[in-house]
Length: 323
Image (cartoon, rainbow, N blue to C red):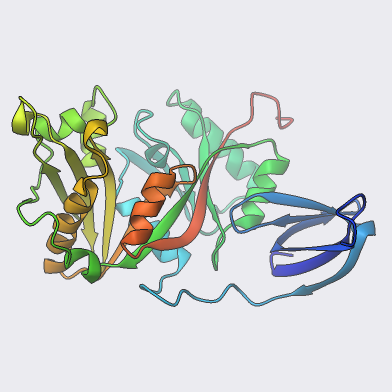
């Protein structure tokens, strides 16, 4: 249990000539004659014990051959420091985070380690804490990497918690991005001005949102002026970067829809990468949702690649888990 396995099972009613199919992932349960295997992207596969042909424990997925090496825990802590909530509280080694509902990342539990309570008691405490603040309870988990939380995901699903969002955290070397010619005239600033905020996707930015946006060890904002009648008052592209030791985290990279595919996102990120490199960073990270194919192609072209998937699980409806 909890190990990465490869399982072969017989198929019924499949393609003629194909008798077997293989599944690789983390074995998260084996109850009542059914195996539950969590694959890299977080999806669960149920396999009847009666269909098993063979199975074995297999080594962890090989380390990335390009870009920086990093553990899940290191990246989870770095990304959390780059998007700090306005309120937080420990529950054992878990961190409860709240920011009046502004983004799931700033309003979810980061469960790194032992909560100091049995799981059911810990989840009850989580629900009370968020309920006291008028917020739904979310738990942020990860799958697909060494030290990720496939077992916790399976336990949450057993208790009726619903996975609402899946995205990936990507990493890459910073120097190749900083060496690009794009964005030579873009000068990052310490604060998000009115022009930057006017392009930010989340409209009606509140005081809480401004606190979250400005949080982190060393925060930078960049924008490319628009070429319309309002000029710099309506940026064509914006981005945010947080430098934290060897890491530079990119977020809020947004481009005017009428000006996409002109290299503006690359210009913003290259300018921020140069700033981060000057502060001693050497590696970059960013988060991208599964369905955002345009962003995934862009970041892959910059040398970034997926490190692990992360998910947000929402508490079940009242009484759905029997409590």
